[in-house]
Length: 385
Image 1 (cartoon, rainbow, N blue to C red):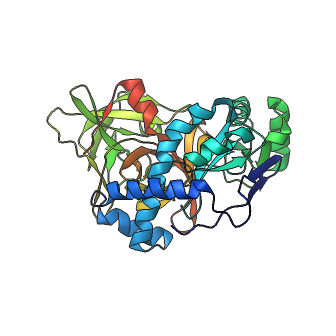
Image 2: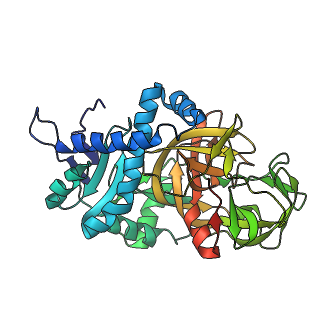
Image 3: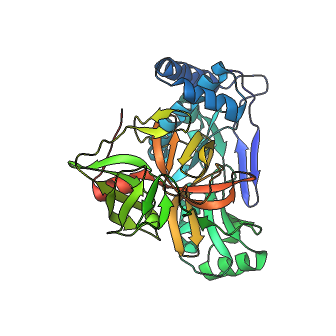
């Protein structure tokens, strides 16, 4: 793969310097990443549908070969995302895929981690704040209810906690009320108020003959079939009365705080191990978490299939109905009625559409509820290929 090395990453209140070798020397991490990606690509060849390759080409302006290169690097990043945080422990500050998906960065507060990270194929980045410190600050801010406060998330690339508010004064009040160190914070004082993507009649599934949402993924609880979706789509006991999905009953639902639910359907209903792309289908193979910067796509009954990238984990979103924690932030668009729909990266289920801002005409930000908490909390098994 053809690489250009990033020399520095900077942000207000953060020092983030890429730890590169002497000028003219190719970092060992690049060679190792190339080898790992080549092995991953060999596994991907023949196991990725042409639809996946076509959408990556269209979304990111890639050739077919470059689309396979991107998937291979993202596959390596997903493996490192499971391994590196435990290896670095207190010094770990985040992992992300570069914009062109030709490099994997790992941030650390300890320069002695450099050699080990390079040996894994990652490019080390020295930063000021470890991830735990930023997440602790996020946890201190998240529960505060204040008009004009829309949410927060940790931006691992910029090594900062981003607070989203209607204006700078609200952000200042919020920082003071939470007692966090202002040097950890970057303020987005022009954020749009998020809304849950809800209902206006039509396709997918209808709850209580009144509002529409979208199916996330097929699941089973023991021998009981069903699907996961967004919690704000229905409360426990609500009925799915019509639409494309089989009739069923909301067994469990959490909203706000989280935004997850599962619907049980009849024992004779068929569960499909794929996602509607509105131009075909996408197989679901597993629920491996994709790294920040990875490509990701969303399916929903209002706007169909749209793609983009993962921007951040553990986003706090403050809807009018209350705060929701632990969301994943993306730049994929969505609109009302897409709620509950599938977020998938490659063939890995990621989560269920929650809400956001903007639309699919002008673009926007969309948050999804990671699927893991729903599966573990309710003993659900994802239906896969």
